Length: 214
Image (cartoon, rainbow, N blue to C red; front, side):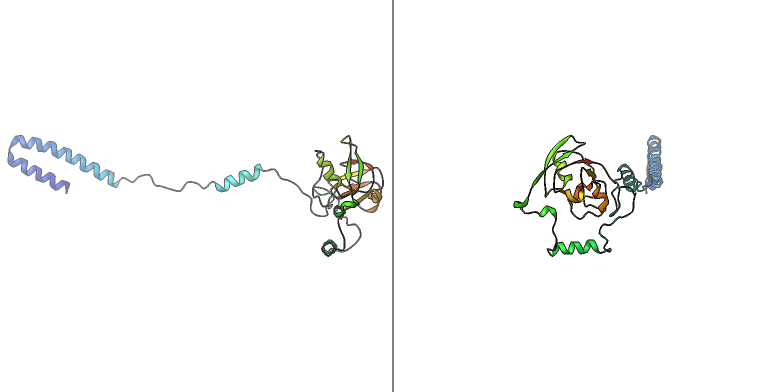
C-alpha cells in the first residue's frame, strides 16, 4: 500500500509541473527508506528465548556436601563407627527387648527413675576427671547429673545400647550401680567397675572416671 501511495504522489507531481516533481522525488526517497526499514524490522528475528538453567539440583548437592556427617551407633553396636559386635546380656531371644517393653506397659517392671519420692536417696559421687564431687539421687542417671553441672560428657544413644558413655567406678558396679536395661556390659565387666553412665543409677558412694570403656 505504501508503494501505491508513492506512485500516486509521482503522478500528481508530474501533472503539477517541474517544481512539484522535485519535492515528490524527495518524498519518494523518504518513503522508500521507511518502507525498507519497516520490512527489515518485520522479517528480522529477535533473540530466541530459552529457559534458564535449573540450578536447584546443583544447590542441593552443594548444601549436602557442606553438612558434616554425624555418626551414631547402630543398636547393639559397642562403639561408634563399628568395633565389637553385639553383646547381649542375660541370654534371651531377638524379641526379648519387646517383651520387656510389654512387661513395663503391664506394670511387671519399672525404671529406676520411677522411685517414689519417699524412697529417693542421694549419694556423693566423685567425678575424678572433672575434679568435683556432687550429690546424685538414686533416680537420676550419672550422665544427666554430670550434664546438670555443665560438663561435656560423652554419649551417643542414651539407651544403654552402645558404650560411648562408658565410665569406670571404684568398686563393683553390680553392687553400686543399677542399670536401666543396659545391653552391652556383661557381669564380669561390671564387676571390674565399668558402667554406662546414660542408664546408670547410683546405689552407693564411689568415684568414677568418665570416658572409660572395657
